[in-house]
Image (cartoon, rainbow over all chains, first blue to last red; front, side, top):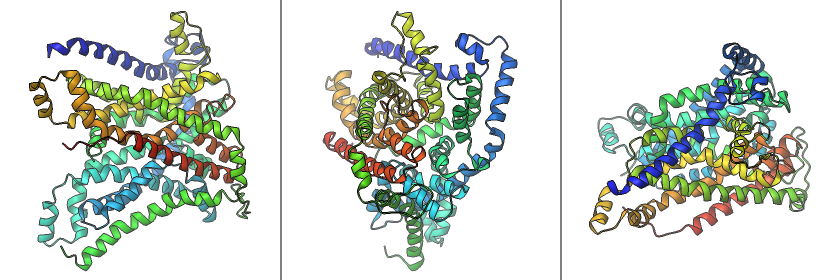
Length: 280
Length: 294
């Protein structure tokens, strides 16, 4: 061990330096959200002269200007429904690919792999045309559908890796005990793969949460807008001279759920993502 | 194993329902883009007119198109060359040297890849700002004159590459750390007995055995770079100044939202599909090595 100690020290120095580079922008985000715009332009590093007053002013302005209260529930609903859709479909097909000894399992999993390689933007205009044809523009449904189907390849990728780790004996003994495939899947398998469902579900939720590309295209009415779309208007409305205090306060409100989810599930997110995907 | 009817119908539903939905809403639109690109669809009127190859002719005569293709490839290559070697070497150092606090770094460095890109873009606009930006203040300490990093043609792509690396580094670090961890310990033990030092172990065991993981990541990164790059460009520069940071993906989105030219956007989308496919194939071909089973 002794031999590497110099190398380890150098590595540590770089790790600490890089940690600082990672932390500074986030620290700036929180610090700025407690300052008035004038204070920010005077010195971006200084603490506010009146942190409590400015914080309250910034956050309440961000909350009302961004309509965060009203769009919060809407966003949670849309993202939640899309997560349910994507998890249900992906769990079904992942189970079939890995456990059902299908003849075409290989080509089927390849079909889903293709989806991982295609940028989401490619199919956007036909999707819009389809929504226009079916009169689904400006409905929450088309956004849920668009989100939920878009993440299927990723979820299948995460889940098939996880399904493979479950011993086949479980299903064999279930079928000997007289369970039909539906019961085996619903009662025995699904509870077992809960970690994979949680990992995939959270990544998808975060993905939908931050999306505005599809939202801007499909949704027009303000009451159906998601938070990230509001965030965007924020910046555009405040124009060239951005009110940084309020913008950063809104940003903090916007990433607060992300922060909380990450703090709770970080271990599971990281291990779930790397568990099976690294090998095979 | 012979399957009975209940079992077969189960298989049919389990594969059929998701696959039909997936093909209809994800794969088919990618091909349908070809047909939309032959029309003058403007977003509202369904009275589509066939315009033939008009959009493709326009595209091949459009200097912004070439610029955006070039920028996308430069973004991919630039971030790969910086991010992947860094992530791989830190993954090896963190895992092999058993740095005790590695879990802390893993959690910290991974965090940016979960944060919405919009917020990352906003934070980096503060870093890059010409008047009060953190980067200019830092460079000022060494007497280096400040720059409008996102507002100058020569620096804007570099600025975006750095943002992308900052966001993705932790993701690939975590990915590669898991890969290094998967390599059986006894390989290193026997290498040590044979007298191979740490450096030789890295180059003869770790990297060859990690190669498939790296290669897979490189292929998936083609799509990631397109998506992440779009989000960053859309918030920070809108492709500016003077299309110097325009990516194929952002250019396509702009022709939808700003020009309302869905036909042209579809042509660009087809080009995007072709270019990402070619790029992925080139990456697959050029990184092909012997695969080691372990």
